[in-house]
Amino acid sequence: MTRILTVKIVTVLIQVLVVATIVFSLVRIMPGDPAVMVLGTERGADPAAVAEMRHTLGLDQPVLKQYASWISDMVKLDFGTSLLDQMDVKSYITQRLPKTIELAIVAIVIASLIGIPLGIMAALKRGGIVDLALSSIAALGISFPVYVIGTFFILFFSFKLFLLPASGYVDFAEDPINHMKRIVLPAITLAFGLAATIARMTRSSMLEVLNKDFVQTLRAKGLSEKKIIFKHVFRNAIISVITVIGLELGGLIGGTVLIEYLFNWPGMSSLLVNSISNRDYPLIQGCIITIATCYILVNMLVDILYGIMDPRTR
Image (cartoon, rainbow, N blue to C red; front, side):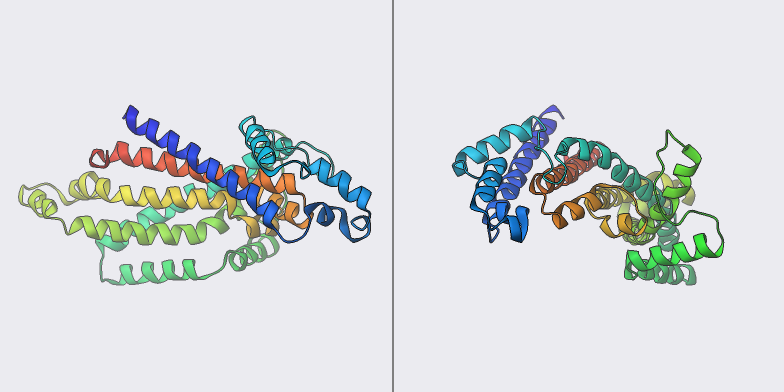
């Protein structure tokens, strides 16, 4: 197991290095001078201002020196300062990242609590009315865009029933109850489609395991159906489901743009979009590296968990 962990950690470091290299290259191969784009049309016409901005961005140095400096700073978690307000990029990230992670984890927990039981029910009632109904609901959940679901939830739960706030963020330490109320709608909106995906994966995995020969052997030995389903079938089927959950969780960290905007949730995705709108290159680079690293780490944890649950994969 130690060798596997070592290989995984080395793989993660290589992947992060590749992402950092791609991010570094993209900024420099984009059409136009980044200094002019940052300064805008008026100030970009001033050669002195452009030269000063290029020096600020480090673009007047040789490319290899820029790359070495970029990698060195990234290892020290130094992503520079925002061009918009001169605030440290790392401060932006440490403020926003926990909010996105919290939203993603709450959404994935809700989706798992809904999707896994529904998937099990659909598999056990294969071909029946329950299976057809759950499969239809799952298809609808995957088909509807998140902004449509979110808008409907806001109209229904906030403006019709007046049960939950429509948007906004309140720090947990400041007001725990209000914080939990404000995370419910965005989390359920994200969980709606995720639950459908998890339910379909659970159903498929359960049906695959139910058709295995060892299940018939267990029944022939006289084990109860309940024990067979939950101790043997579900234990084997959940491995594939965990993989999907891990991938979805990694995707949520960088894929909650519409939800964060719709519910005014101050997370990483909205920060990245704002930095792109403002052409804030240091902040763009810091956001992309952080989101990509989180995704890679989640995948590594899923692989390790997969190995723990299924010794055959080691």
